[in-house]
Each structure stands twice: as structure tokens, then as C-alpha cells.
Length: 231
Image 1 (cartoon, rainbow, N blue to C red):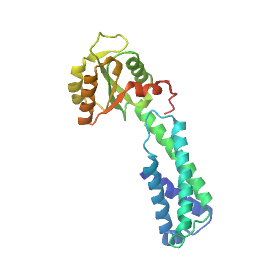
Image 2: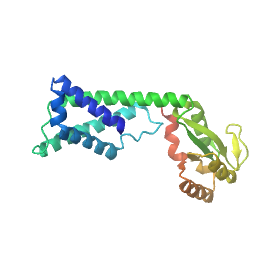
Image 3: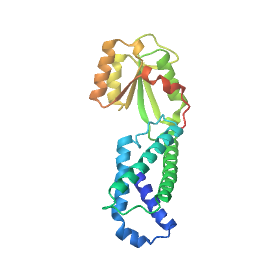
Image 4: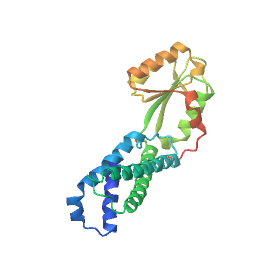
């Protein structure tokens, strides 16, 4: 949010320069307008969760969502500015501002994605993950983690009770998972529900809730395995 607000205000100042308006006069007289534009964007951020980007999202999806948010922002600003015209000075050449804001915002978002991707490739900004259960989905998500280090998932081990699989290295049995997860500050657990008993899944869900660990059922995650990763 801080980066977005910085970008917005840079775009606003650049639009004033482009229109050859006096910056001193702008700072003195148009602070209400600046505050108005900032508050509306903050509202859009929290309404559409603009900055809640999953590390598995493709760049095109991120930019598409961002573009929709900017369109809603522009329409909302124009509507509110018209309704509050008695209190807020009409926007001078709003088109110049919104074009600059969109361009800078897209550049900022792409740069952020690139920086995070680089950091994850270097072993930074990672999430420790475990797999509970065995089977094709468990093996598939394991390969996914191995093939996409740029997403920053650090595979810490798989836990299952049936016979050991060469395709999925086993760290221990399901009963061993809980102490291991606590000792190693695990961030996410991916559960192959087909290979577990209902009571085991219930126990895992309660454990994750109590320890602030994200719990994901692999059937809900299956679509990710076939996505072209752009981040």
C-alpha cells in the first residue's frame, strides 16, 4: 500500500509538471484534492485486495486485476468529485493523471514481482511447506515445488503412513508431522485427502488453526499444477 501511495503522488506531481502548473501553489491549495485521491485508492486497495498477490499467480493475472482496479478507481474518483464539487476542487485534466498513474503503477508492480522472484531464486522470502499423505496429487505437488524454485516454496518433507514411495521422499508418518511442523516453523501444509482417514484430516485442520499454519487440500490445488507460472 505504501508503494502504491508513493506512485500515486508521483503521478500527481508529474501531471502538474506536464500541465506546467505551479508546484508551490499546488502544495498550498490542492492538499484536499491530493488527500481525496489517496483515500479513494486506499479504499480500492482494501475493497479489491489489490496487494494480496498469491506467489503462484501469473504476471498477466496480476496486471489484469490491477487494470480493473484502476478503472473502478477512475470512475469512483470522477463520480465522487462531481458529487463533492462544493468541497473538493475539480480535477484538472484527470486523463493525464490517470494515464501516468496507470503506467507507473504497472511498472512498480512488475518491478516488485521481478524483485520477489529474484529473491526467491536466491533462497530468500520462502515458505516452508509439508505434504501430508501420498498418491498422485501429493507427488504432483512435490514435483511442482521442485520445478518452480522461483515461487519460493521450500519443501521440508512428506508424511504418510502407507509404504514408502521413491517418487515422494518420506520424512516420517502422519503422527510425526505435528512435532516436526512445530520445531521447523512450517508455513503451509498440503494434504492429499485421498490417502488419509477423515479423523486424521480433522486433526490436521485443528492443528493448523491452532498454530497459524495454512492448510490446503490438494484437490482444491490441482488446477495450479497445470498453470504456466509467470512470477
